[in-house]
Length: 362
Ligand code: AMP
Image (cartoon, rainbow, N blue to C red):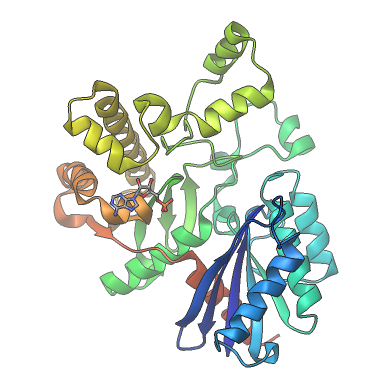
């Protein structure tokens, strides 16, 4: 059967089409410039129509009837979604409610779902949430130490993100180590433009570095990660900044870019450091230091780890950074803890979870 995976951004749709149960990739692509001036893709509905026409034109499918399910990446599932869900009216309403928690992402994901429903009304649509894998994190780890009424009133807590990537990498680690996931303690490090680390005990996320939003935790391409909130108040007061201004600074102008002043791309930072640029060197040292700090903390809360798994653009392509991590892991636990580089595949995870859901008996 064929499963289509859709990842809808505000102005783009990334897609991959798979054949199951073989898990082979048939085709993939990107529809861009949705809603932009002078673009033929006026909205997500036009985008999805163009995508489906392209699949037929490329002969990836002969007709839409061949598609058995569409798996949608949905960024935020709040506390409602612990598992992938078949999208019905109730689920749509809940995803809409979760838009409060991810106002930049969930509305685009929803637009993609509605467009697919319109173009393929009889095909089952499934939502796979970035946050769902982390819903096993215990309350003492997800609660912020602020008055509890804000959790009750506004659902302020740690949610965590990159869930499908952490889950995929954990399953791959179990395959590589040839041990059941239920017997393993793993630390998975998703190091891309966005970065997060997760502690996984017996296949379940027990803590992760991202928080209420993807801003918390590691230093990232353009996000600051952990920071004393009082420092943020200080900058706002000194520079007379609005909430929108400071949000842009912390999310888009910080991290590797903000410290180095060069780029958010680790390749350029490494080149800068090599050429003797002190800000580039500092950015690189901070980036690696913060990763080690989280790995150390998670080794401690897990009571040791069978493997530290490194993935995504930075993790998969920078053996020198992985070597730094390996040295620290080795110094603590010798070769008891393996360091593995694993290619992540979030779309394949979404397709696999969708396949599992539609294949499981009711
Ligand atoms: P991602 O968000 O997973 O696509 O990762 C993006 C980051 O991966 C970029 O900022 C680059 O710094 C890094 N990256 C991607 N490809 C390479 C490569 N071939 N060599 C080194 N770093 C890379």
